[in-house]
Length: 601
Image (cartoon, rainbow, N blue to C red; front, side, top):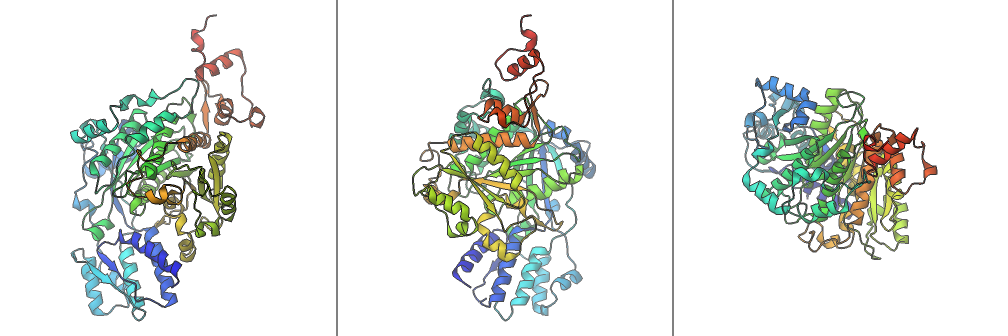
């Protein structure tokens, strides 16, 4: 195995180790090239595969209860309850009956493990019974490689392929938050009145415009604390509460998607719980097969020991601000927009996997008959803008697959002054190009854009060699939309990653996943965050087919031209002002005149 192969396989095994805690893997005795390739394929498929049936709760606010009554009714019918039980959003799932994994009989096991001798088979029987509690080591050599590989695949595919059950649904009781969480959040946000923030930062004559001071406020306070479930559970719970309250105050359908994959029982002896926070701005086609949802996502969690200012407090701030601006814009949208704070990204993108598999696909698309989504925008690290020459690294792997970007960055003296949009050229071009158009039209060219289109990744799941070579490009939540290697063969969904390239720029070379990724020693210039957020707002509003104004006369591109820097000649449609009254109504919408009915005659 060459050095690059060793390093990539080591990285994959490290990620896989978070999923296989009760099994130790030792591949040091495997040297045959064909066996090394087989191991690479196993580790990659194991990382991307989600063959288990997860169990999950949905904690919904009143708007979500009404908008997703199909899930509420199913939950009541299954449980035999006349109404949802009152459960705090912070309750830990402890009902082991709900979390047990499916049984497997001896004949099924023999079919999976046909080449094992009786001693090995008896061990596997005990392991698959669920009663085996010891850690055991799989240490294949070239002589017994096929048997060991068979066991490893069996351990990954022993879960049921039956459709996931409908989730349990409970009301989201925000008034029943633990006192310590509420007090911690109040101290964290310096007394911010969360219930009023829906319009606190609204600026007259600037609909669909972000507020830089709101972004700064969030990043300097609530999004610069550790959000790790093991080392900072109180701060993480406070951030969950903050985002949930924000979404609720905006009138969104709010769902706290509390998940625990069934395989965690086997690997960890206990459920590893996470919570995705979902806010939905329902479009005109909500609840029908005509809806083509759009997702904006950012991961919420951090690794131990880091406040996560850039990774990924910056993405969370963009997420919450985009939700605020779009929800209070006064515009209507044909398609629904989902705002999602993903959990457990740092543990193998588990939150986005469960969101795509269980909630988006299983609870929304399948139930409403939706066959496609418009796409997903994933924001992961966007605060690190560094205009110093030599501040930007562009590793050989990136240069090999993105040669145009390598030349561009070299021509700019390796300056970390850009946002990167990472996408598959054959699949995600519409998303990337729409975002690029709005980003560039905003001006402020010292915050550049690099379009990073990958040619070799398409809609179909690539083979292990291609995925291994592209491993640097699939290490955030967008990969769960690209390749959710599920037993139900979920098709690829369009998605792009928006990033400052994390550890490859400026101070994040030293501070990535470290304590110095914080606000105090962090980033004074948040212009990149502001520009990315503004471009996302216009892009989401356009792709959702937004119409603005008192009579819905203004398309989003037209409104952008009025308030942005696009020339009037470039508009596809002229602004439809049919009368003086129409013009006055539009000026009222922009905040420049009082309502028409109050004008003197």
